[in-house]
View 1 (cartoon, rainbow, N blue to C red):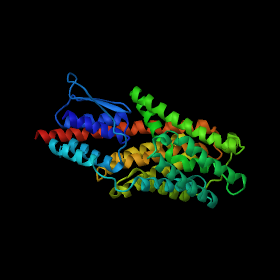
View 2: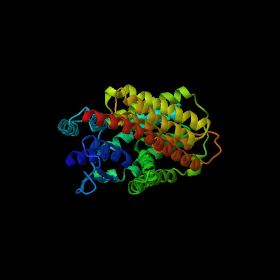
View 3: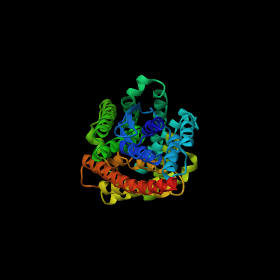
View 4: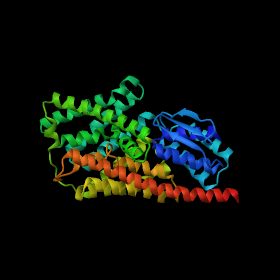
Length: 400
């Protein structure tokens, strides 16, 4: 059983779950299998597992990348274990089968999802025909760069700088020529799929929850990625003869909420393709992401970025738990919605999205970070209560 729990932990960690969520899932699975004192310590790059406080502890490095269709299978296994519906030997077989599952489409096709994300975000931030065209071309460039980076490791390390410069410079030149307005919004929309916003907020949530090692490591990694993106964009700004302050100070009119909602839905579909989300859960994912994104956009613009991020993150978590009662595991619907409201991916746009908001862009972005993190923590607390109830019912069923 220790080997099963260790493999489960490394696969869940590779699927993008926070350290707290990995520990919660594996501990619950261990209790369901008859090991009430199982010990788990998750870090960003690996996990320790022991069957009891006195038993030897085993370590395994995290799986480098887990697709969402695989993650759905892993979480279905843990849910059935908690409910008492799955024998241990069958759980081991299902885990091995899911880990070896082939991708439903190629890596290159998955990267094409970034085009829908870029166009969707342009519709969310600055829906004019010139910016949509620029977003389409820029997103196609990002898709090509990401595909190459997936095969050339040296390029992957510098992808933020390369993408930041190659996307920003042509957009700034087009703005100078008078072909499009809102160059900063367009740049952010195109590059958003590569931003480590979900890593940043997950690290912040881990840190607040007491997982200092995992949280600090995630925050440091995300901040380094953001710095590299900034370097690429700053180089393009200097090459085009601009000042960063000129881009940040451009105001924009308030576009209809319906257009923004269409942008959120397009971006959600793009995320599903990019992350290999299971198609059988498409309706649930689009519905939850659409609601969370609409709330974040409306409240972030009408009230404050902090409230928009908090409510959207909380609705995403609670909504995913409600949907888990009738079908998809909660992470499968929650993570795409989380990527909608996470600062680096989408809620970060609040800084460039607000028109007439009195706070500075940095304060707006910081408050959005805090709101999403608090909402994530509250949603996680509610989820753990539901886990405990389900686990107790499953233990009673096994004993009976």
